[in-house]
Amino acid sequence: MNISLEQLYEKLKEVRTYLIKIGPSRREGKVLNTKLKEANEIFSDYSKLLINFNSKVKEGKIKSTDIPSYQTYCKNFESLYQDIIKLCKPQCVQSENPSNMDTFDLKTALTLLPVMSDDETSVKQLVDNIQYYNSLLTKQECKNNLIKFILKSRLSQSAKLRLQDDYSNVEDLVSDMQKELLPRKSAAAIQSKLQKLRQNDMPIADYGKQITELFVDLTISQANGNTEYYNILKTVNEKQAIKQFSDGLRNRRISTIISARNYSSLKDAIQAAQDEETSSSSAAGEVMGMSSKKFYYSRNFHYNSRYPRGNGRNRQTFSQRRHYHGNSQRSSSWNHSNSRGQGQRGRYNRGTFRNYRRNQGIKRNIVNIINENQKSTSDEPQLDKFFRE
Image (cartoon, rainbow, N blue to C red):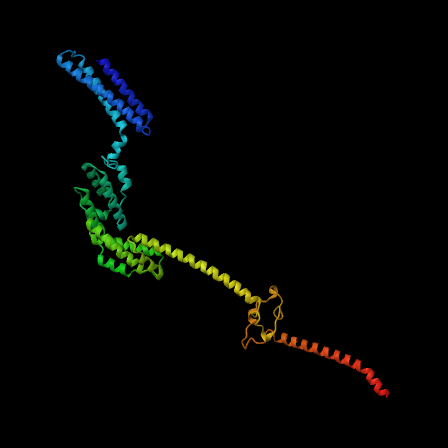
């Protein structure tokens, strides 16, 4: 009998050794099912041997000196089988309650619960972390340790004076912290401030942040700690905050777009307004770039031809402007010379035009002298003939 039990024990021990050797990463799927089935078969054989042994003990076929050794083997065998069950189902055990903690861990508490200061943000953060850590603890003893830890080491001196020395549960502690340490804000004052807020010179991101803060404060103030009221008021106040955000925008076009889209989330409305502002800025930049290019070509056209084609002054056509010296020699005062005011008339080109008329007159005089010389030369034979007669 003992030999058979020893053999079963060695087989079960081999199964456990194999499961430990392959590690938890490979302890799954077909391998896990095969080894678990093998362990169950060995334990079934053990149960049969145990029943047979107990019947023989009752019949008196087993010596009393053999019973203690057999009981020791049975105890070791059952302990070994329980170890195998734990190795085969680690994921199942952890997934049933993955976040619960059976003990109060001081290291976790120090990391999760910061020392409170007297400002509102610090108090809110500590309250939220207390509620979260309390949800992880399962035993009342651990929750009592959490209460003592908070009262002794996480509160400021002024907060300790406002709170009690001890609490029976964490919920009462959190409720007193919210009532005594957080300032009570008037819902009417918050709503009035929300309705008067405008973007003015603020960026859309900063304007949206202020709207969001007022929306949250208004909801918390109206709910007064009631979770059911909070869920109802959140929906109503968020719609009001979205409307106020769109109405207070500086850009009327963006305001109309946000109102027409009928957003249900305030953060989506704020992001959409930022996107519209970015796209509008990009489109304006492209239009300005095209206008500058057109102005450049238009300016160069007037720069290179003083008069439109076919409309020359005094019906004269010139391939180039009068006194044209080329673009490279044009002085910076060219724009002034094109002025037609009384003060500018003749300032730069009076002498030049006089010289032009003088040159034209000299040219005509030279032509007349040449013609007269030619005429006098042709009349000389007639004069000689006249005097001879």
